[in-house]
Image (cartoon, rainbow, N blue to C red; front, side, top):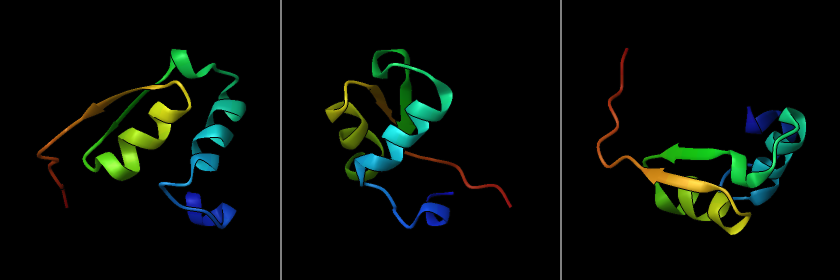
Length: 60
């Protein structure tokens, strides 16, 4: 959880920490999200690919 690290999206440090923890290069990762400002643009700035899902379903 981003709150465990005191940062939250769109802070790119969150994505960088995930890449480091997984041992992956940005080009190897696909970010999927429903908010371009939080889920797509920040990881793209690091070299990751992104897919914008316009209608995310929420399950209870």
